[in-house]
Image 1 (spheres, rainbow over the protein chains, first blue to last red):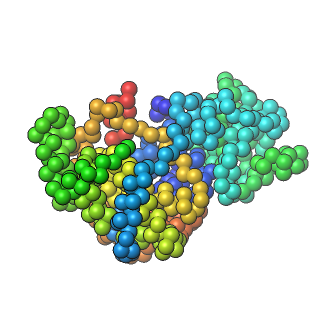
Image 2: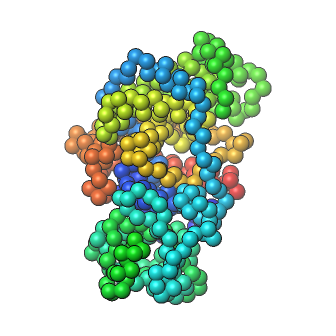
Length: 216
Length: 218
């Protein structure tokens, strides 16, 4: 996917280090991997943080292995590589996301959450939740605050909120002290990948009830 | 990939010569330059050469040497990340087996051997200890024709060495913080935005490598 041009909102070093170290919840790793597929700037940064990991791995005290370790490893090798499922390619979303959808955007099983906005929760570990959001052109996602961290990556179209405008490839990170109302651009329906490590707090009663049923 | 153990053993006994004998037969200039680059970076980047020998000749001797050096480091890394000794031992063997099977994917113009092994060990850690899938960025591949340029390999290996030296020179407290971030003792919320990582120019080198790659992919 060649979408190198106009990305203006990137991943923080903090997130990139977490991704490189492997300490983020799965849902956050998914947003990071999807953004890295679209942004060479951050991909280079992520690889440089991997280099730090390489240096740490190399220059540390060692732990002895059992006497049979090499022989056991040769036996593992002789069994042949574990066959990984073929990665889906050529979809309208980057490969890492496509693996969670099981295809492209047309394969997403959307559920309405009101005002024309639709969502689909993706299956990840429970520490954080990943979901796709479909916001019709010109529509708004209900005003909400956050208990934890929310990351939103734009896959199609664009949205504007109190902070800035976010277009394809851009990432917005919202923290606890931030309440915002994202509104999709008029030109095109907006599709985002959003993850949270805590449930959202909606400011109106109805969405709060809906929240219990819809896992948002 | 099917492994031919007989050939691998022969190669292991004779060590390097088979790999270099190839140089004198029908190989392209690019491959010649590649092997020259690998030779020039010895002894500091001896492990790049080892991986190349595993890659091209299924060289078991090279693998045994690499194993002797890196497996105790991988095990230590996994134990620091929370694995019990038995688990760390098993995972280390799986990491090293993966290294053999994926040797053809190692690109010395984009990472040092340590860095590449770190990523395999980290992914094993997430898979086995944290029981999570690890989403990886979309694969960017050099075309079948395009071997990385020799000069790019040398520069990347030198950058990695410099980074390693700079890490050693860090004040103890700062290095400890970075280790904690990487060995999982800090949650991502606790990682300070500025940990003072001595990244130097490695990021811009990697950025350049990606630009080149995009050019070849067009």
